[in-house]
Amino acid sequence: MPDQVVAQNSQNGASIGGSVAPGFEPVEAAFRANFAERGEVGASLCVTRRGQTVVDLWGGLADPKSGRAWSRDTIGVVFSCTKAATALCAHMLADQGRLDLHAPVSRLWPEFAQNGKQDTTAAMMLAHTSPVPHLREPVPPGGYADWEYMAGRVAAEPAWWVPGTRQGYHGVTFAWTVGAMVRLAAGEPLSAYFARSVAGPLGLDFHIGLPEGEEPRVAPMIAADPSEANLQSRFLADVMGDPNSLPHLFLMNNGRADFNSRAIHAAEIGSANGVTNARGLAGLYAPLAQGGGGLLRPQTVLDMARVCAATFDDATLRQPMRFGLGFMARIDTRPTGGDSLLIGEQAFGHVGMGGSVGFADPAAGLSFGYTMNRMGTGILLNARGQSLVDATYACLGS
Image 1 (cartoon, rainbow, N blue to C red):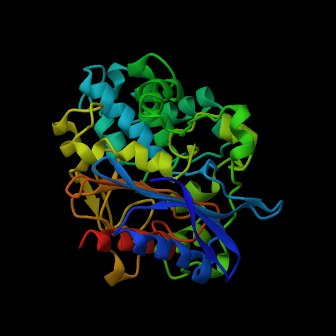
Image 2: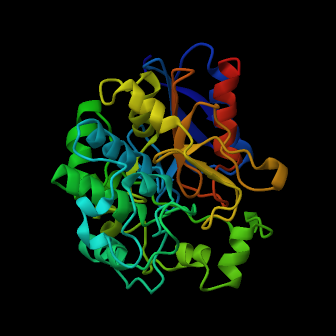
C-alpha cells in the first residue's frame, strides 16, 4: 500500500498521513475522531494481519511548541511498552537454553540472593510476583540513568514479600530484574542484545538507549491533564495519602527522572524508556501473532500468552490485574470502575504510561501498535487507545 494523505481534520487542522487497506477504513475514522473529539495532539497507529500491514497512520503535531508535524518517522517514548521488548529477549534466551526461567536467579545473579529474595526466579520477575516492586529509600537525581547503581540497589533491596506469594507491578524495577537476567544470560547489555537479535533482524525503528543522532526525531511527551484523573481510584488515594505506600513510591520515588531528557533517552531502562512508534510496536508483535515467526518456538508463544499471575488487588496498581510471563492479558474492570485493557481473550501485550499500547492476538493473526505524545491519566488504556483497538476488532467481525 503506498503511503498517502488519507484525511484532513478540519476541527483542529491535524494532518493525517498513511495508508489503510480496504475493510479497515473504520480504524482510520477512529484515529481521526481522536483528534477531533478526544484531544489527541500527535499519534501513530499500525496494525498487521497475518504479517501484512493493513493500517499505517500518523498525524498531528510532534512538538506543539515548535509546530513540528508528526511525520512518518517520528518516534517517542513508549514507557512500559518497553517491558514487552525486554520480556521477548528473556524468552529468546530461554529458548536458546541460556536462561532458565524457573531456576533461582541466584545461579546467574548471586548478589540478588539476599534479604529474603533467594528463592526468586526469572519467571516471578516476568510475572510481577518477584519481591522487588520498587525501592523504599530515595533514588538520587540521575539514578535511573545509572545501570550499575540501580542494579545494585535492586539486588540489595529487602524483599517486600516472600517471593511468588504476592503480585505487585514492577513498574520501573523490571528494568533491573528481568533486564539484569537478560544481560547476564546474554553476556552483553540488554540494549545491545535487543538491537542485534530483535530490532535489527525485524527492521524495527525501536531503541532501548537512543543514539544521539536520532534525537531530533523524538516527539516530546506532554503531561496528562490532572483534571482528567479518576480521583476515586485506590491507586491515586494511596499516592496522595500515604508516602510510604508502594503506589506512592512507584510514582514519586524516581530521582526526578525527566523522560524528555537526553540522559534518560540514552540510558538502558528496559522497563520504561523504549523509543519507537506504532510501526515499531506492531512490528515487535507481528512474529508473535504468527506462532513465533522464527524468533521463538510456537510453544513459547503459547506460554507467553498464558495467564500465570492474577489478582483482584495488585499491590502497586491497586486494582485487578492479569499477567503472563512479561505481558499483560485482557483485563476488564469496568464493573468496578478501574482501568481496562480490552483485547482478545488469547491476546497479550503491554500498555505504556499515558496510553500507548502494543499487543499480539495469535487467534486473529493480529499485531497492533499505538503511540502518542499527549499522555492520558489512569493506569491502562484510555478512551483514545481503546477506541482504536475496538475499531480494529470490529473490522475483523469481533
